[in-house]
Each structure stands twice: as structure tokens, then as C-alpha cells.
Image 1 (cartoon, rainbow, N blue to C red):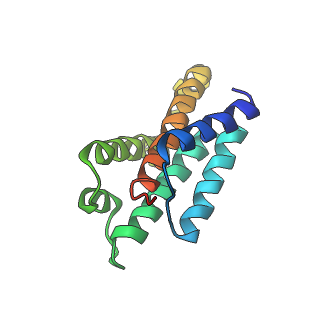
Image 2 (cartoon, helix red, strand yellow):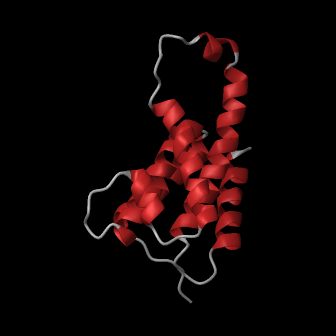
Length: 142
């Protein structure tokens, strides 16, 4: 995808998923913007990591009531529909595979299959953009 196509993808998601308006904390706005910039720049892993951070920030601002709880518990305790909860968990688990690497010295698969990983990451980055917007637009106002 070109830069213009990536911005168009983001705008199409907003048109599809946001009817009316949505409010979120300025911290969340900042992180969402960084996620968008990473996506457009082709930093797919950064997009995924940042999307999960933005989702966590949104859920904490909306539903944590100043309690410090683990992300998994925050997702499970948030009053969002089960389908979205499952999607967030799947994205979080995928992110964890990249963030919590148990054997980083075992890198032959990455060296030999770099293109495959890039395609996989690009697909997940697009999905991360969708899940981020589904989450941050879940409490819309008209």
C-alpha cells in the first residue's frame, strides 16, 4: 500500500465505524495519532504495539476507575461486547509474541522468512487499526 492508500484505509475505517462522535482522553488521542503515523510509515510492528497501548489507555480512562489492574483483567472487566473483547485479546496475544520473545537468539526463521513475517505483520497492523477504532469508538455520542 502507498502512503495515500494507507491514509485512505484509516479514513475509510473512521467513516465506517464512527457515526457521530467519540470522546477520549488526550493521552489516548496522542497514542492513536502515533499509531496512525506508524501505520502510514510502514512500521507494522510499531503499529501493533502502539494500537494495544492506545486500547489499554482508552479502557483505563473509561473503565479502570483509577485502579491499577492487568490488561487482561481490564479487558475482561470492561463493559464491551464479547466479540470486541475477544478481538482485543487476540491482538494482545499476537503483540505478546513479538514483545516477550523467549529465545531472541534463535533468529533463523526471521532471517530465512523475513518477507513472510512482513506480510503477516502488515495484515495484523491493518487489523490493529480496526480493533483500535472499534474500541475507541465503542461509546459514541450523536
